[in-house]
Length: 112
Image (cartoon, rainbow, N blue to C red; front, side):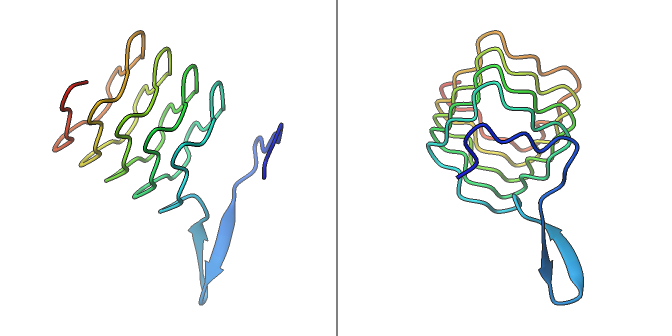
């Protein structure tokens, strides 16, 4: 539970053997309320953000490689320079989202 947590400029890491790995990589955040959260530069590769509320969130420069954002609310979110290669955005709501220079190669965008 991270209610009202402010982790700036922190970095969530877990040790896997002798290597550091970002804690949010592959995380299950399905249905999470991350509205207006600051996740700039976060590594959310492979994370499950399906049906998550990311309205107004800042994801500038975030890594969302192969992340599941199906049904996510991205209205008004900032995804400038976001790396979303292979991400799934089926049925995501993106009205007013900023996707300037976002890398969407290979992303699924059904009913967006």
